[in-house]
Length: 222
Image (cartoon, rainbow, N blue to C red):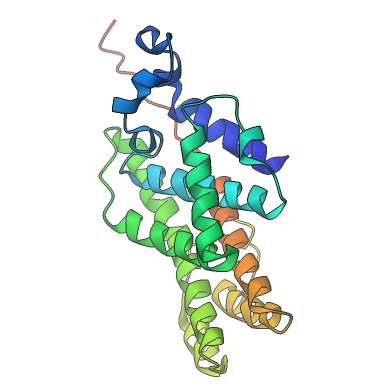
């Protein structure tokens, strides 16, 4: 249910201008000229976050065995859903999750600035916070995969400061150390469990912090 709510929120607001435009009311064929994915996930830090959240939400539904045809009644959106299903089917869930986290990291580095300065300032903080968390977990996953012990990572993590204000890690005394410890602990069950932890903590950061500041109205204008 939570994933469906995320999916509905992302797509409803991101694609609203296209879904409501009278010019496209006659059929879906006219959508062929539109870059739907680009419209839904613009090249901004927030767009990067929404793309990652969307892909993980759809992958989670794939994991539960949901039929992609049942996820939306809007034909314009179905290719986005199917694209994720196809990618997961090719890569496998764990690799897809890791790739999605890594793609978010890279996307945010090259993102365009928001036109609204307050919104951009907020998204800079969100990216620095969530990408910091992802960096620690991705590094730990790579170490686990390569059979390295956690000692060296813990030593670095003890010196690392993460901005976890407003996240579920806010009250954790040493969040970087906690993340490394958790990845290694989960990996004792399976590597997939460790990946699940990493992607969930990363997406929780994005979804809990993705709040736009109110747009300030220019009181000098009517």
